Image 1: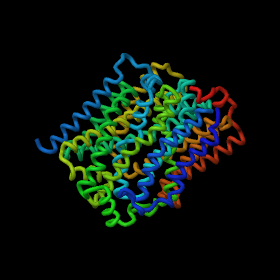
Image 2: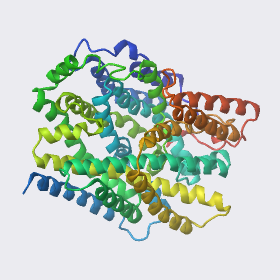
Image 3: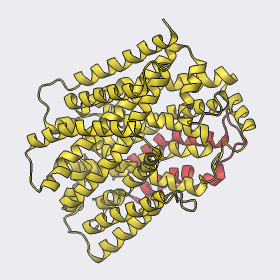
Image 4: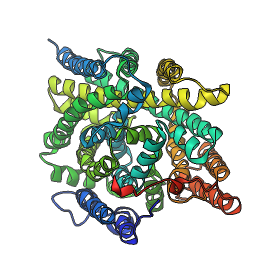
Amino acid sequence: VKKPSIRALGLALVPYVGMCFSVALWDRLDPHVLGLPFNLFWILCWLLAMPLILTAIYRIERRR
Amino acid sequence: MTPGTIALVLLLTIVAVGSVIGFLAGRRGELRLEEWTVAGRGLGVLLVWLLMAGENFTAFSVLGLSGWIYSKGGPTLYILVYLALGQVLLLFVGPLIWDFGRRHGLQTIGDFFTRRYGSEALGAVVALAGVTFLLVYLQLQVTSLGIIVEVCSFGQVGRVPAMVVATAVVAGFVLVSGVRAVVWVSVLKDFLLVAVAVVVGIGIPYHFFGGIGPMFAAVEQARPGHLTMPGSTTVNTHSWYITTVLMSSLGLAWPHMFGSIFTAKSADTIRKNAILTPLHLLPLVLIVFAGCAAILAVPHLANGDLSLLMAARLAFPPWVLGLIGGAGALTAMVPAGIQILTASTLLAKNVVPSVWRRTFSEVAVGRIARVGVVLVALGALYLSMHSSATLVSLLILAYSGVGQFAPGIILGMFFDRVSPRGVLIGILGGLAVTGTLVWTHHDPFHGINTGFIGLCANLALVGIFSWREPGPAAGPSAEAGDQFAR
């Protein structure tokens, strides 16, 4: 089996850092955005960004 | 008509339409086993997406999600996050599992372990543990369904009759149409559920607070600290969050996820599905809004899982409640269907042949699986009627338990030398560590998810054994071609 490329794995790490490991940095109420507590707004942005990140990984792997 | 009757008629109509779809889905003469279990490996992106969405987006996750934000607060965010991160793993590993499955004609997670490690015993152990975890999960769907129907029909339909009828219907359409029943009921369920999420997620905050922003402002003022971690708990801290997200994102290892992977018609179907699934999580954000509004709208509920429905009952006319009830019932029936199907297939293909020490013909396996459907459905009903606090801890164990299959799946797909004995001992060791900590009430253990601790033990065991006695060189790379060419 061809192992995934370093670039793809690095990109895969981005959402883990953004939504999981960095929790202490964004788990707070202020500043509120669009009336939402900051932690909920942060997660919402990441959910919207996920298809883009996954598409980028898909493209990198397909080219190989 | 009384409000209860209006709601009830609408609810029953939706469930009836869903059931008819389920029974008609497989009407093409006698189904071969592969057709019944994995739809002949012929589903495209949209249908696989709906099938997997049906598994992620369950009645328990809707009631549980609103229940958690109601009673625990901030820690609830983990549910939105682990489902999204699970897709990263699915993007890398899913296509490999699919390809391995197609080349060897696999239909279950038990088949996978048997074939990859050349050990029927390992396949049987994974299958048996998988059936146990599925039963617990299934019981929660059935219980959630009982709650939804009871509340939305204003108590006109009792919890127990609702559970019995719905389980019988689900078992019926699984018997007749197999996995295709689940897929097509999922189409109806998904449209209804997105509509319901919009209605409750925006409607409830507007009804009680005049908007989503004012609602959060009111909750933050009345319950300081509730909406950040650890919220209204003492144990669900940031370290708990990180380890629980990591552990739960291994949901790929749920036996019914394997079945869904095998239904895809190509490896690319799996990849596109993984890319699109995070969008399916957006309605869950709306469910969080609704649960949050319920904190002040219907305070002091003993059971937080009822919060969304109770708030909806105050905010909406009966016909909306009927719509919510119908969508909710289907949302329980879809995952229940796939879980019954998966558990009975595991029993017939992996457990029974190992216990009897003989091979059965495909026709015989099909018959055993259909008997299994009835037994699994009865088992889930029995557990639902006798549910107790022990079952809640069983569920925690079930979630942590399936994660223990992950090293054997993920490492096994990338490295030839993973040892069969290491995988077996790793799974048993991981389950033992997790089970001991959960049952001695040490969950989380010093702020760490217990399943995660079990997983560390598991990985260590797999590592030690694979280093000392590497597996046979007939691993995946001995035969695999270029994965991305397909």
